[in-house]
Image (cartoon, one colour):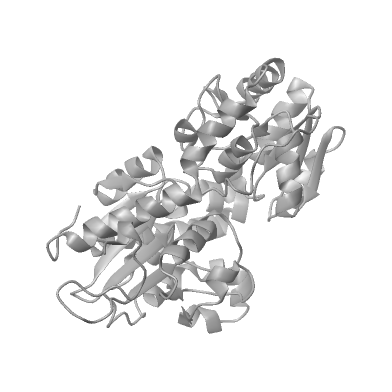
Length: 388
């Protein structure tokens, strides 16, 4: 029986009577964000697979992830690693290469940092579900470590470190037999930085939970986001103020104090909310705003699954997930003026919630799991050593 026909770990290895062993590799497990939702769905397909990660904060992810065997790297035992793990970034290459994967036949990495660079045994096949090549090492250094973020002296010290990390990331790209990308945009990044081709399997969205409901729509727009620089929540705030519309911002992160100083009036930061509360906000907002360029962007699809439109830039993952004039508004420029006009346009339109919902169903959890299973089937059927 093939994976695509209902494979689970324990399926015989090709040509043997022994059970095939699967290892899952994830950068870190410190919260339930988009990458962890991807991992959770992969855990459904491979319920007995072992899980390897740089750092694990117990209880921070989903039950499907937490109940399996988790192997952690030496980073776990460094001071305050559960909170300050990002400070140990220069050690990640060493740590990820220490995992002993002997005895595994299939390795699946979900990677936006170092996970794709694990060293696999010669007989094993390695499938990388690439969330994105390392942003801060390649093209977004200034957004994370520029002088305005960490100060001029530290930024100058970090630049050669991140340049070295980018070279390591490029040089270890060949450790993967096949790449899957989360969007056309990420596929282009994989081709640019790794010189590799990739197939697209869209990330899973819980379209069974995020559903429309017959509730009144308020006069507010919505942002649901981690409060970090590249998400451009500050741009959404400025555009809302320019357009004269109300805005609710859900989320937390290192930029919160800065953003709170910019808020006031009809712009509110409300911190973290439960999934049920976020679903209600999706259903009752005029539209959800994606203010920055995302590799994919699960939030816009969750909003569309609730039957409500999205305002987003015409770039990145939004080109895969938003249909202009049908499920939302795409703006041509990442400027206050352009985004403000997008908000006014969304407020003027009468939207077809059923059409928006139908589009979102393309990104369901079941569609994702079928795509992963199909990719593994193809990889395991390929000649040993073949790469794409």
